Image 1 (cartoon, helix red, strand yellow):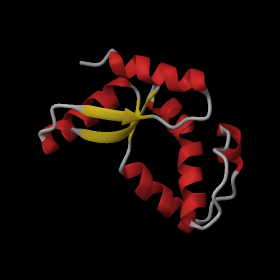
Image 2 (cartoon, rainbow, N blue to C red; image 1 turned 90 degrees about the horizontal axis):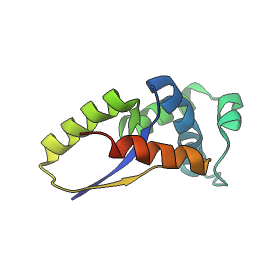
Image 3 (cartoon, rainbow, N blue to C red; image 1 turned 90 degrees about the vertical axis):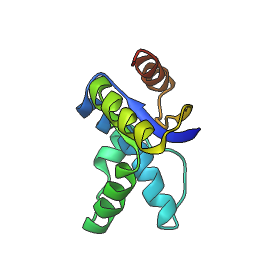
Length: 110
């Protein structure tokens, strides 16, 4: 079994937008400023420094974020690389409807 942070949306751009609050939340935690999960709008308006962007790129690289075809490809690569036959997924987004939609799109893969 392997666990992964996965966010699926209708396309890659929407998925990246929905992932921004979780990435900002991680940045705040990592820099000693934990707090509530921000909204998409708060994440978009945040004044990121170059250091912040580096931390976020690193964190995002360990997650699977995208539209259905992107996520399907990345999940396939992850499962092949790990030889896992079971996958546990967590999706961190501020809106429950977006989380449910991500799981619905994920369930429709493969």
